[in-house]
Length: 68
Image: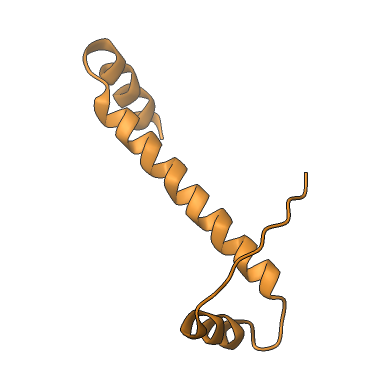
């Protein structure tokens, strides 16, 4: 699926984006930044879920983690 978004950047952010891509593909850089954000968000959610485990569930996760 492809989605189109429209974003208005302030002058400083627009200049930083243009400098970062150096005449290259701004859309690809923005897409990579969104993917990075979503990955970090998913990792943070998993970490919070792991921290919420207790009892047998926590022991099972510790066993799996030890194998890694």
